Image 1: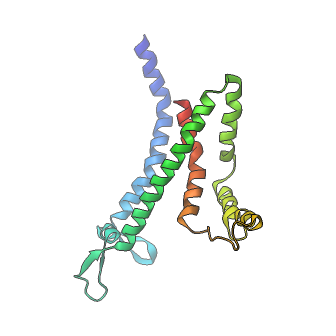
Image 2: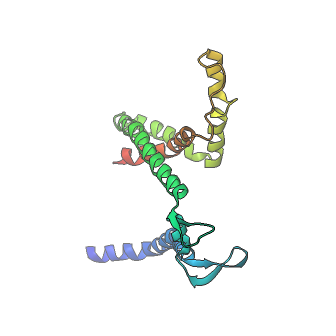
Image 3: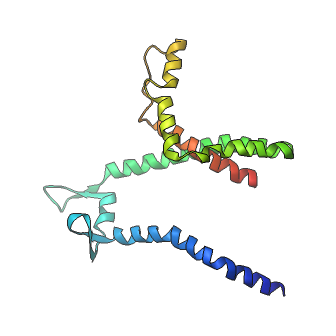
Length: 186
């Protein structure tokens, strides 16, 4: 009897699972297939198998001597910077997320919902709008520089925009709630 009820649950949930799997893997599969095809005319693709695109991610050919192949230092530098910033973001979110989740979990039951509400408020605003808000804070004439100049801590604005610090700040702001909520649930 119990086995039949589990079977019905899987049958009922299977359409949603199929949609989720296709929605998650479909675009990734399309990109993977296109990455091993040859470039076509006017930005399209020719249906000829080619690993040239993946080769050019890691290596580059000399313009004057196509037989000379070297590592593509620019792409590898971007890859290294991406890994380093993502590692730092993870550490910052963990350092701020664990105590926050612990704090929420140790509050009285009737107060936890207020704290969870405050954690989820940023999700109500579009990511693009939140990005513009952070830019407004850290630009040369933004709030942070204006306050620092007014307090006399600096003489002229510090260039914070378009730096690794700005990327780290933005990513930490975006991903912190995504660290706190699962930790709280656990």
